Image 1 (cartoon, protein in one colour):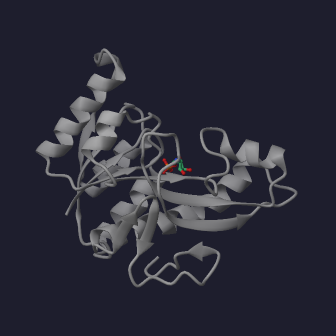
Image 2: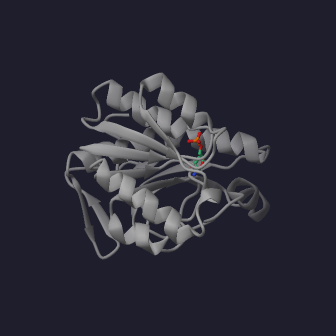
Length: 215
Ligand code: GRF
């Protein structure tokens, strides 16, 4: 199975997925990285792992629709079956979502449906929530509203800053994202309406549900 990763930034989640592929834990190939930012750290990670890089600056396109049409044509040309958004800072259009329905994953650093969108950790702290976490979900046409695959719960501490909370959550992101990708590649994920089930997984063991098996 061929995977594409779309990233705009640092790329630490991309790196974890690439490591799991290299280690043989995920039996798939990362066909390419697509990025909209020339300075994305993800580009260096792709170089490190010998993964093809496609830099696609948005300013060369007239609108989001034509930009995403180009991405879809590249993904189809490459024979990609799973698209992983990993710190990808663009909202994908319905055209893209339809072309890869239930085949685009995203990671979001909160316990969705709480705190979607940007500036998550600051909002969590200002609200006074006592738990936050991370969510891997499929993409639908809304913002961070798609079917949830796996979530990890993380405590919020009184002394937390957005950075300390982000770092605590990131450690779990790095485990749940490769795990979700692995389940997808193994064909264990089913979706009914918006309910995702992982065949054979345990749903009994917080802080991560379904329970981590390999990460
Ligand atoms: C992560 O916190 C992810 O949840 C969010 O953007 C951040 C990306 O970090 N969507 P990285 O680029 O994977 O290091």
